[in-house]
Image 1 (cartoon, rainbow over the protein chains, first blue to last red):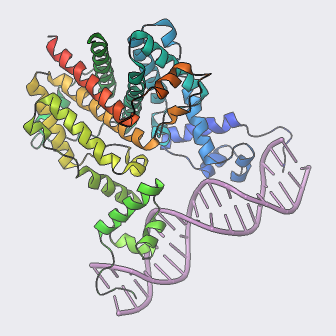
Image 2 (cartoon, each protein chain N blue to C red):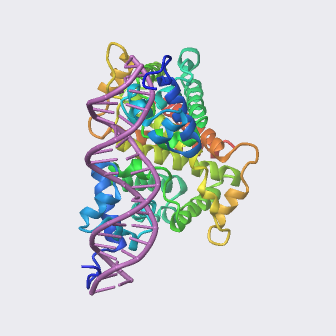
Image 3 (cartoon, helix red, strand yellow):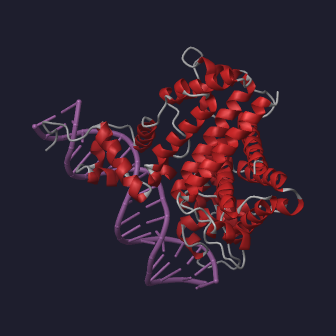
Length: 203
Length: 203
DNA sequence: ACCTGAACACCGTTCAAGT
DNA sequence: ACCTGAACACCGTTCAAGT
């Protein structure tokens, strides 16, 4: 068929299908991707530079769904809470893909703008400039670690009551409604923000 | 040569070399591994079940270097601080390998014992059982995210002063002595523990 | 028990050839 | 410009054959 009259592929369709595959299998290959798109592997290279670029595009795609308006409309601590949950939700929608994407969070130009608003908000709240970057990185790390956790799905629960009585008690007596991963995010984020508020007050 | 009089390989040497390779390149292949060990790829399968098992062994090897005596000799918050730093140090020694290993932290029997001591310590300190598991998971997530960060090495620093003034200010006015990643760990861990102490006091 | 070497079924990527 | 199909240099893993 050589060149079809209307293009079979475009970048959006490629990224879409790559996400669909890795969401369910935890990974994707160029071969799988091509086969799902009804096309030969080599065809993909007319639209993307290689597998790594597809991964970058997947990350960017997920990043675009993150709410980045928090720091404009809420005080710094409430904004961080909202931003954190929004990040988490964006990655939870693609839990299977997280291992593939989790190397770093999104760091394109739009994401940097979000970090810029965060830096501005933290400084305006009273944190000194030397404190701002560590706070942002720590927040980032916690969110990323938590996103990874939603995927790995708790292998802490194999605790044997005989060998690990306290851990077993903690596992068995956990709250029923929300998932452990969600509760952990709530607890961790709250503690982190409480700690920061006190850091701010103690000066 | 077929079977040599003294074995050329053993599991320790294999894991050792795999770590050495992935520390420097960020990954390893069975082919590379065999070539570094002066042996044919197929020879490795007499000692390990496959590439995935090597990865598990690498994780376990690193896990063994973590100090697990903190909760026996220090109050819960000091113990968590020490354990956190010990985790971080263990993975920082293999920063290049972290992407490969970071799926989950170590969760073998010995690690579960450490979590068990942590659960016991937290409950003894006054936290209710339903709170204990989320605290442990949140701690874990923060440590894991921070370990990943030591590897990715800060791509936040590409901030353009024109586009991202606040972020640039934060980057330029950061503390000189310790690495941003290390400072972030300090700030995040401290805030988290402060938050937990207040959670404990407010009851 | 332990290493070899050939074999199998995969990869990602390149490139000349077609329309 | 866009898809094909052959080609290249890799993978991880299996297995019969040797000692």
